[in-house]
Each structure stands twice: as structure tokens, then as C-alpha cells.
Amino acid sequence: MKSHVFPLVLSFGLGVSMLGGCGKDQPKKPVDEPKKTTPVPSDMVFNDFVPSGGGGGIVGVKTDGGIPEGGMAAAEQPGTGGAPGEPGAGGPDEGMKLHVTEPGAEPRAPRKYTFVANRSDKRLITVRQSAGREGGGPAQEAAFALTADFVPKQIKPTATKFELKVLKVDLPDAQGAQKAQAAAQLAAFKGLTGQFDITPRGEIGEVDFKADERMNGPGADVIIQSLQQALELLVPPFPSEPIGVGAKWERKVERKERGQENAAKHSFTLKEVSADGGVVTADVEVSVPKHPFQQRGVPPGATEEVKGTGSYTYAFKLDHISTKVEGDMTIVRKIELVDPKGAKQSDTTVIKLKNRLEPAGAGGAAPTSTPAPKP
Image (cartoon, rainbow, N blue to C red; front, side):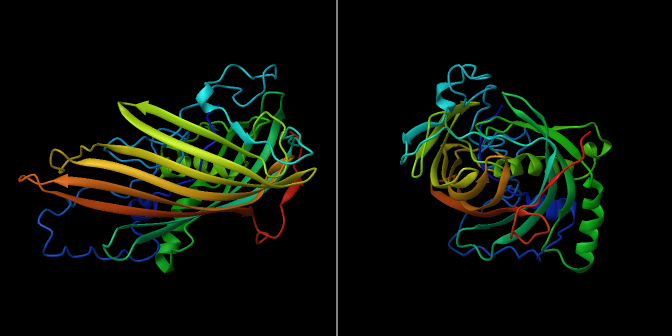
């Protein structure tokens, strides 16, 4: 079971590479100022953000220079988050646990998800992203919308197995002929199904997709990664200890992968609570400290550094997935170059994300939950 992590960096490759530039017109590359003596190489990749190695990442910032594929959090052992003695509690890495910093007001109680078997929840998940060089002209923008049906199929003490079914994939900002082209290509993914687990504490597992020829088709990697990351919007995770209104808990992760250090911190607050749900906010901080950056066309001595902050609000229900989630995140990626004379110059990319989950077809007004036929 991987750790609960956070949304979803949309790949411009979906709109630019796979669909030939669907969406808003691409801005012209800004002209370098005369004082810039060593421009950033034109083949340097700044917009390939979707991870290639599966979920398990706080923000899917991926570069050929070694930023972690899928981000900042290591895979978590099954049962992570369970209290000692609970089924599946296992013995997770201490660094991956949720730690309560404030228990909140009385009355306090353990918060657990008790999903209802075969109940269908249809959700629309929308991601909007802009990315541009700091001080370098208009940002490139793209949007991705996914409508899916989520149904709990098997409920066990350790985890509930969900089935997801893709109902629609769309690029909402595409226009005219580009809109039609996008619709034709994305329609191939309608009906794609997969399964994943959610523990009673809200830890979300990897999606296991059924064998399907579409998995090897154009754009499949982007769709699959987007689906995996979209799961992070379904539920907030809870600690094992009893908590009340105002409670705060956090997870800090520091890891070293391929010699590179990464850090992430998730801070949660229980803002509202009722017998069946409430509101949780989450603040996210991620960082990849300065490290050597190697990529074709980049001179020796280059370094890269990434920092990100974000905040999300979950309207959660204990008996089904969240009814509404909204959030945004800003990721700053700085590359420092050294010219042959030893002079340094930097190039900074700013990525801004807006994520939203809401009931599908209901305008966000109310949850869409209906009993699904039993198999």
C-alpha cells in the first residue's frame, strides 16, 4: 500500500504531443534579452511532468535530471496507518506514519472509513495547469478532465477493494477541430477498468488495470498515470488515534533515491466533523534540494532544485469517497547553468496546479451515489 500523497501534475504531453496541440494556442517562445549570453538549450524538457513509474508520488514532477518519478514519498507497507493490534497493522516504516500533533476538542474518536458495498459514486476530476519560465512571457496552459465511476466491491477488515471505470476523458479547453480530434482519441479510453484498495484509515493503493489492448495504445501512459494520481483526491487519510474538531496530524517523509534526497511534509487539520463526515484541510510542502543536473545539451556543472507548496480541502464522508475536493499547488523548478568562464545564470520554471473533484453531472451540488447492481 503506498502512502497517501497529493495531486496530480498534468502532462502537457497529452495536449501537445499526443493530440497535436489541442487546447489553447501555444505561446511563441520569448526572445532572450541581449544580456543573456548562454540561453537554456532549446531541447531541455520543462513540461514532462507525469511520472513514468507509477503513483506513490506527492506531485508527479519528473525530469530526465533525476527528480523522482512520481515524487516524494516511498511506497508504504500494507497496513500502514493501522493501530497496534489492528488487522493489517503490520510494522510500517516509522517515518511513513501519521503523527498527531494536536488531538483536537472533545469528544474525540477514531475516524475510519466504512464503505458500502456495491454503491456507485461517479466523480468528475478536473486538473488545470500552467507552466512558464519566470519572467519569460505567457505561461503555457492545459486542462484535463476525467469522469469515473467508483464502486466498492470487496470489503475486508484490512482494506476495501474498489473498482473504477472510466466514463469520459476530455480536454475541456480544446476548441473546434482540435476538440473533435481530442474527443476521437480520448474516446478510446472510455470503459477502461481497474481495481485498487483503500484501507479503513484512507491509505490508497496502486491501480491494477485489467488486461486491455488500450493499455499499449497512444496516450495510455498519460491516462494511466492521471488515473493513479487522481485517486489521491478520493479520501483524506486519518491517524489511528482518537481525534476531534481542530485536530492536527502530519506525515514527514525524507528519502534518498539514486543518491538524491527528497523531502515532503503533509499537514492535516480536522476543520469540521459530524457522525458521517466532515471537512479536512491539507497543506503540502515538497522539496528536492539542489543537485547535479545532467541532460543532453546541458553544459557540465548545472544544478537543479525543486520546491513546492499547496493546500487542499476535502469534504469527506466516512461511508463513501469525498463529495468535493478543491486545491492548488505551486511548484518552482530552478536550473542553474555554468558557462565556460565559470559565470552562473539561472532559469526558473513555475508550475501552477488547480485540482477539483465533484459529483459528475451534478454541477458539484450534491453527491452522486446510487446502489450498483450486485454481481
